[in-house]
Image 1 (cartoon, rainbow, N blue to C red):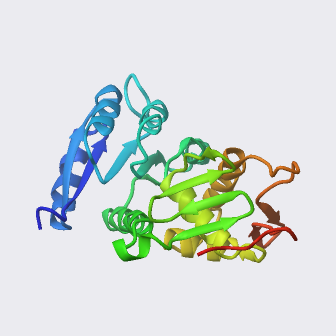
Image 2 (cartoon, rainbow, N blue to C red):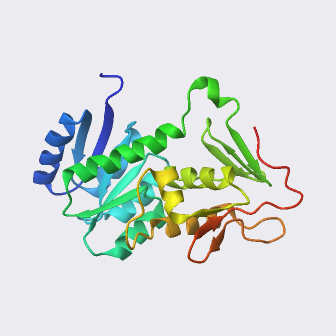
Amino acid sequence: MGDTTQRILLIDDDQELCDLLRDYLSTEGYSVEAVHDGESGARQALEHGYDLVVLDVMLPGLNGFEVLRRIRSGSAVPVLMLTARGEEIDRIIGLELGADDYLPKPFNTRELVARLRAVQRRTAAAKPAEEEILSEILRVGDVTLNRGGRTVRSGDSVVELTSAEFSLLEVLLRQAGRVVSREDLLLQAHGRQLSYNDRSIDVHMSNLRRKLGPTGEGKERIKSVRGIGYIYPMTDADPGQSP
């Protein structure tokens, strides 16, 4: 079990909460380390090979958003942010900076575990078995997604994506030319149902558009279909998807 135990870094200044989560998550098969300030959290996340990071927005000194910026400057480790209940702007900012998911405080520990496992499933889906890796390449126009190598290129440029963004782009490329509903996108990419007022998909799509940039003709790569979802268009000259 030692080799398969998922290591979680918890960055939160509430030591009582950290102790509670360490005890609870250990019964779920996780190994938890906790730090209580942003500086130490960012440094530890970048220097050690954690499988997941749980990051509180409200930290003394260096706040959670700045910690997330530092982590994303050198690591793609999945990050779940803890936000104040009702503070939608915190969730939006976190997602724009590269968080993979969020959970408002106070929260049910079962929901935390469910969300952590959903993040794990997305990460695992991006790392297929060795025999699948050689053929797991999607190409639509000048965008190439290598599922095995977990890389994305737009033209000659490497595009750095978070785990959540990578999963969403994969769903869109696999169904290029077809409209995918927001509900289906969230279910296929994130493994959970769309909830009322959940704007995470829209924030991730905005990030994807910005990172991928326009096509060579200056057109938008990902188009929104009002009231339904999103589509990654294919052009007449598009050779289609591979493998």
